[in-house]
Amino acid sequence: MHRRISEFIIESLIKFSGLLVIILVFLLFLFLLKDSLSLFGIYPLGKFLFGTHWLPISEPPKFGVIPLFLGSLYVTVGAIIICVPVGIASAMFIAEVAPKSLKHVLKSLVEILASIPSVVLGFIGIIWLGPVLRNLLGLNTGMCGLTGSLLLAFMALPTIISISEDAIVGVPRTYKEAAFGLGATRWQTLWRIILPSASSGIIAGVMLGIGRVIGETMVAMMVTGNSPVIPKSILQPLRTLTATIAGEMGEAVSGSEHYFALFAVGLVLFVIAFIINFIADAFLRRARK
Amino acid sequence: MSVGPKLALVVLVIFLVAGCGKQIDPNQPAGFIQIKGSDTIVNAVQKISEEFMKDYPYVFVAVTGGGSGVGIASLINKTCDVASASRQMKPKEIQIANQRGVFPKEFVVAYDGIAVIVNKDNPINKLTIGDLHKIYTGRATNWKEFGGKDLSIVTLSREVSSGTHMYFKEEVIQLGQKKSTEEFSAQTLLLTSSQAIVEEVVSNEAAIGYLGMGYVSERIKALLVAKDEQFYPPDVQNVIKKTYPLSRPLYFYTNGEPRDATKLFIDFALGPKGQQQFEETGFVPIGATIAQKNQ
Figure (cartoon, helix red, strand yellow):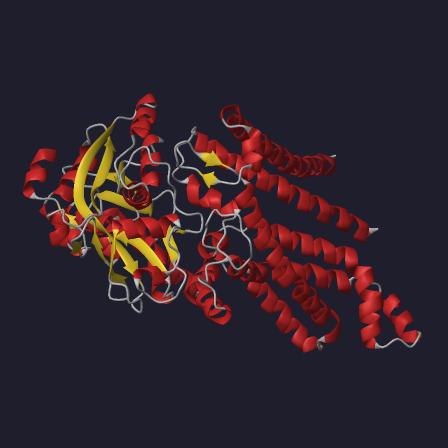
């Protein structure tokens, strides 16, 4: 009897925690939606979604989200191009190629990589990476999308590496043994057997990495130059959604048009992150089957 | 219990007891003051508050930057006691403040010149307001046009939360005309702090930036600026004489007449010790006449 009661309590506590998370996410969404909708009462939705100028303190202000969206897109795509191949290759190396002793060292190094605060990376970007890129590529300024992409790729690597590595290790031994039995080389086995079998897990890792990149604020704000321009290339200064919220929230008087506009930017970001997580989740579920 | 934990316990008790010794003297003013706002004078205000806390050990002062807009917004949102600002509050802001039961009182605490800075290797030494207007609105894009090297100009600005940004926009981008709708060219880099502007100018030969005089150092070159014909350097003398064209007062704002600890702080900042700190951090202290007017 006593045991049953305690079990019931524990069960309800767990259920409560689970429900709490769902409710919190839902409330968060409602909160964002409510404040964003307040903007569209005073500022037309079409102008917000398709406007090409972000001039929040001008008279009259313009809140066009397109430059910010493109800024985030450029930086994120740049980061993906850099970090996905490197991340998957490192995961393959750690999981299948590296000798055991090296494997442990590498795994803990990847974990250390994950724990570097973003503001430190941003600082490195301002002081070192920016000037280096400027001299190397002959740019006007090192504060550009590429600097942001490189640093963000660096930040997404640990996520991609650890999840991909788990997926690769999780491929049943028998697959590998069968491939070797048929006379496949180590590379053939890795490339044609293990990688396709682990693909769902790897894609999920990549998606989570992308989620990290698009939501990262500090690095983007410190190194991308924050010009609210429609970027023509990644070698140009640009302004991301996250940096806009962080840079302007402090001075927006609560309840003003500008304040609501920043919430609307937050909603755009939330929707993007939601879609990415949804896709990652779908792949993870496929991986489990 | 082994020796280690015992020792730790003893040390802990000593700390606790030592803490008790510093009881608040009821005859001394006590309190907590939150100051937010201008990034331009954050270093000066920090120094003043340190001096202030030496005189009034039971008043704790917390200083944060972020920009004048941040300070004014938090004064309106009632999350700070003193807002420091490098621009005046806009009528619209005062109106919103009044609606929320906040009645800002303004104090001029010092004067500042806005220095226009370039890299030390840039041969340009002086520019007119008209030149700056062309550069920052994107009409002039190469240093060659001003007799410099063949380099694309990289324009640096502070974020929109900055009072310096607002001042520069009014005086240089819109040339002081209230109805002007001119904007910073979209290529302008908006950096989050004055220090970030310094770092970029130090490392980039093509960059031009602007910031409070207090940030001018050996590592960068401050340009001579002219409104019409005569060029002047951004220094204390020319700001006092108002011959340097980009100069402005710096403000403190409080909600209504300051009281208790906040009043002590404002008086301290306007007094000789506070003014000395402004001077030491590169700003221009207010003259005796203005100090009287404030009181």
